[in-house]
Structures are given as structure tokens and as C-alpha cells.
Length: 548
Image (cartoon, rainbow, N blue to C red; front, side, top):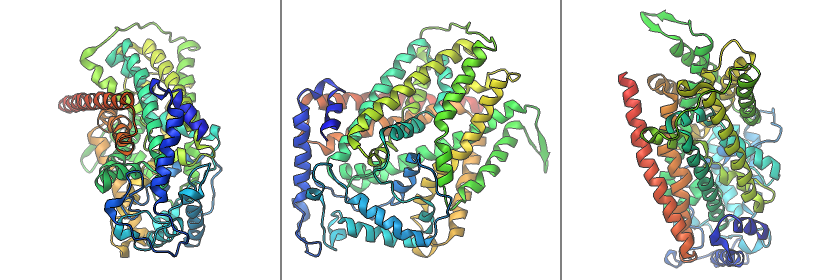
């Protein structure tokens, strides 16, 4: 914890003497949890709910969603995949790993923070002991066969470099393609906003880390939401997170259809009297290709391949530079300094580019050295900032005011580098779609009656409907840049800017300095204003594009 606190110390002026203050916070949290310890797991604890310390966990592990942690852990896997399809017999190993994971608390004294709660913990909404959590999870998984397709919860197995790769893979995705378009909409000075959002999202990511450390037992973003605001906070935050994942799947289909249509612009057909243009044909084709991947019972291979997203991002950026320098397209366009009228679109796009907070807690809990998480966050966001800036500057200087929402659509088709970049943007979403949709599907399957949860046919039916629904949305709203601005303004601002500060203020109430409180309030205000303005602007633009 000492090194993690030191890293936090370097990240803000308010951390001056907080090295020792943070230790006090952790000790207070540990003492709050220790009041529920007993000498034996068989002992019965009867602690009235009103006497709960504000530093203790008040997490009902039976609350929806149960599948969030394992499904999001797929994004933090950089180890070689298992090619064995998971069966019911593999559940036992899942339980043992889950029990180990729950038994981990702090590096200094894990035994002092174990919670040994009696069997009536559900009635009192107290956290279960590690063994009881494993039994509860065992009972749940035995009902829901869909969880068998997921790997067991990640142990603390990721090194610093692996965690950095996971962080970059989460952050640097489809948002990279839109950064030149963001400069076109907001002007050159909008790059200041890119840096500002990078700093804010790095700080709020560290706030999530402090929330996780406030008391053992918190593992995911929904856990933090419930600890701060009860079941309502968990439910609302989970809905927002799943909405973000669903919208990303819609963008995957739009991106694939746009790039395929640019490669084969003359494609069209008429079926049953219905004329389909190239965008519609390739949206349907992409959906048919992707659909079998969401039926897979083991997504480990796709998880392994999706890590190639880091390589893909670098490859696409190098292809852009190659076209500009080697193929002599040149960097001739200048543009204007600032477009205030369209700056709100730029805000949404930049916000989307740094919104990886739904996965940050999973990366933290997967690290061998959690104290290095702050350094991981700084490294990942710094890398993304430079690659975003480089692509934005090169792309806009190459294509100017004609820049499309995806710069791959502007690249001359006759060059090999252009073809590589186009096909890269087509192939990568095929590996990421299933991983992105699976958490949404599992959350819905949890709501079904117990009799349905063991049916793989029901799972296939749900996932098929979800995939087809994203196709319908993508075909009716094929506006990649505007939809991304809407996601960034409405969803990403809440997840990455507003909620981390709100949860931090609530979980550390009474233990923060005035400067820390003022900083959080200022960030919440900035996020709320940007969210309102950006959402209104994005919806207005989408409405105009529909009319056109």
C-alpha cells in the first residue's frame, strides 16, 4: 500500500501529507470491517443494521448483476487462451479460485480484514465470508450454464506490463478513428480538451482505486455503486454500463459496414421488392458473420485475439502516416483554431476515447501488485493521448474539412496501406463484438426464471435477439461520428467523470480535505455540463441527419 499511496501523492496538490493520512483511512476501513469478525466461521453474528460503520461493506452479493465481474474480466486477459470448452465439471475450479480471490485483502495483513459472517447475512444485507460467497456463487452458477463459457475470476496474476496492455486495449479502440473528425468539428484548440479529459479520467480512475481500497470486498464498478448508494446505485450504474457496451456493439456494425462499403461501393441488390444499398448489405453480412461468435460457449480465444486491438491501433496509425509520407498524399490542410458551434461534438468524442472506467476495477483486482495501478493508469492514458493526438493531427492535415467520421474512409483506395487499414478495422470488431455483448446477454439471462437459466437454447435465443437489435439500430442510425458523440456525452461522462467523484465523496465522507472535496465537486460540475450540452448537440445532429 505504501508504493500505491506514493503514486497517488504525485498526482495532485492535495496529496501533500496524505501518505500517512491514507494509511489512517485504510486502518479505519479495516477497523470498520473487523467489528464483524469472529474466532470461528461457525459462530453466529448478530449485529443490528443501524450500528453498521460507514466504512464497512454493505453489499448484498445476491444483487443483480452477478455475472458482471467474470464477463468484464474477459477484457483483462492477456494470457494464452484455453481451447477446452468449459463444462459443468469445470465449475468446481471456478469456486476454488473465487474463494481465493475473496480471501485477498491487503498486502500487509489480509487475515485482519476477513469477514466471517453467519448464514443470516442475506437478511441483514451483510457481506458473506469467502467460503459462503463461494457457496452462493456455486449455487448461482449451477443454475446458469451461460457462466460456464467464461473463465474463472482473474486471480492477481497480471504483471505491470500486462496491466498496461489491458488498459491500452480498453481505451484505444474505435475512438481512434474519429479523432481527426473531432479536430474538424472543434478546431485545433480542441486538443486542449483532449489533454484535459485525459487528466480528469486519470484522476477519476485513481478515485475508483481508492474506493476499492476503502474496504475489502469491493471488486467491480457496480460494487462501488452499491457501497456508495445502495441497491439503487448498483442498479442505475449497471444499466449505464450495459448501455455503453450495447452502443459500442452498434458502432462495431456501423464501422464494419462503412469500411466494407467504401471498399466495394457498387454493391447493391433487390430482394422481395426491397432495394438494399452497399451499406445495408454489408451491415447484414457483418451481422451474419458475427452472430455465431456470440453463441460460443468458450470466449477465451476471442479474448486472446481481442488483445490484438493494441497492435491494430498502432498498425492503423502507421498506415495513416505511411499514406501521408511515403505515398505523398501530404499534410497541406491548416483548418481554423476553434469552432465553438460544433465543439460539443468534439467533447463527446474525446470523452468516449478515455472512458475505460467500467473495466478499470477489474484491471486493478487482476494485478499482482495493486499498488502499481496508478502507474498503469498514467502509462495507459499517456500512450493513448499521444496516439490520439498524432492520428488527429496527421489525419486532419491530410484531409482537412473533408475528413469523415472514420479517417479510413478518406484514405485513397489504390494504396496498399489504405487497404490494410480498412481490413484491419473490419476484422478487429469481429473479435470484440462477442466479448462486448456477452456481459449484456448474461445480465438479461439472470432475470429469467430458474427453470430457464440452465438452457443453452434460451441463451442462444437471447443473444440472437440482441445481435439483431443492434443491426436494426445500426441500419436506422448509421451515423458513426454523431452516435459516438452521443455515447461519449451521455454515457461516458457519467461513467468516467461524474460517478467516480460522487462515489468517492460518499465512501470517504468525513475523511477528505476541503481541497479534495472542492476538486471532486468541480469535476462533477464539468462532467454534468459537458454531458448535458454534448447530449443535446448529438441528438440534434442525429435528428438533422435523419431529415436529410
